[in-house]
Amino acid sequence: MVKVGAEYTEVELDAASALEFSTAKAYVGASVGIVSATLSYAKTGDNGSGSIDSFAGSSATSNFSTETPSEFLLWNVGTAGRDDFDMVAIDASVAVTPSISLRAAYLDGEQGTADLDVTEALGQISYKVSKNLTTYVRYADVEDQGSDYTRGRVEARYTF
Image (cartoon, rainbow, N blue to C red; front, side, top):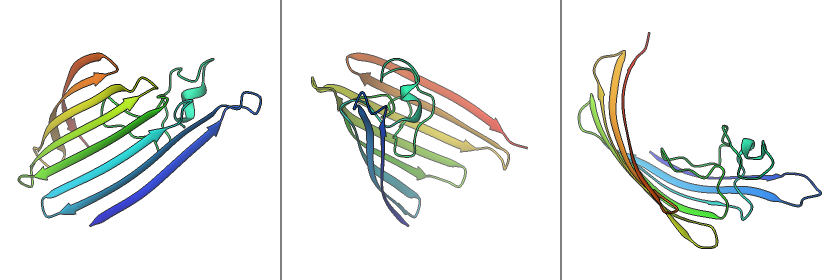
């Protein structure tokens, strides 16, 4: 199965300010046997992304909580709330067994007129213990405009 798509969102804050916020995203994904992968490209406008809640405060880069469909989010790094941001990401997973899957993803981008580097490398191991119980371990290494950090997560989910 192959998926190809393009999405675009544009928001004009008000006619008086003439500020336009936009996000464009294009992607192609495929699944072949036990392997699936998606390659994505996204770009935000010079004034910021087209995220719905980016405009809740007095500045275009204020807090946001809702993303439009055209926004991209790997885990830590996304397009929402970012201005002049270009990024490419690859996200691949392999179903090793019906219960175990491995995921690797990488995002590389630049933000602003100074072309500040933004990268995220992510690895994840998922295990389906039973029909109702799944668990995963996820780890990411992030560089975001000069700030470097790592983040991990362990989750166990039981559904009724």
